[in-house]
Length: 297
Image (cartoon, rainbow, N blue to C red; front, side, top):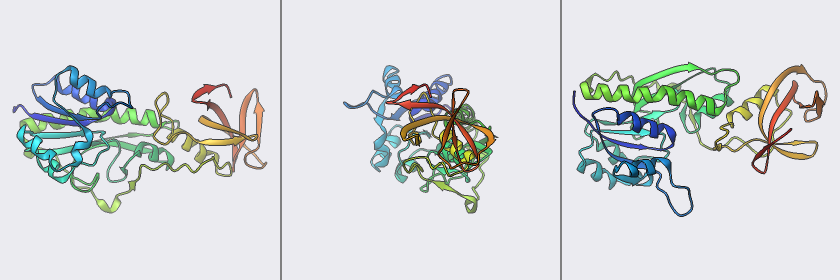
């Protein structure tokens, strides 16, 4: 088995856990590319960890530059692993590793390419999801699939719980790739994507101000769950709503199954629980935020 030189590009806890798993092997992490601390932000956890471990470090923005390819070549990189970094990597950088560059995508391909796909999956009512490790090419999330894992989206799934499933399922795929590359890279079980089935989702939030109560309760509840990364911040923010002329940030709702026949947006208290009329049933509002803090409904 060959010892590999690996360049890790990434952010968030998935990249941290990937690095810690690689450290348990005989392979060599020749550098970490991640968000660098600056004067206006809290120092990134992965950067601090890499610094503590004395790994060479570069700011994530450098991967957009062709000149970074020479750094990868100078360090004889065998494998570039991109784990949840949001920067587009220059084609020259992708081509620099001897064996290849691979991306861990928190979604099934080609059905959910792009950004914030866990949220889009919940919002669009998907019941099946997954995580994909694929070869990186010039087009985003379009390279050959090396390994993938699929799982079910439950009725009460939130963006955080679905992202966590991707994390638990994704890191073993990365380690499987590393083991295969070290043994025989020609035997990676590549599958070409059927790009006629490709759906690409932008990172832009679908929120447009306030919740529209004249939508079905299921759609509103899905929107709330698609934004729910609590206790962490949501890239989409949280839905806002007017209830009795008060603007609320709504972070948790639940379906009642109780049909309503009054105007959407009207509210009532049932056993001290707030319910709001929608296009088809009463929707219960379980948790709201005020000035960033959870307050009793």
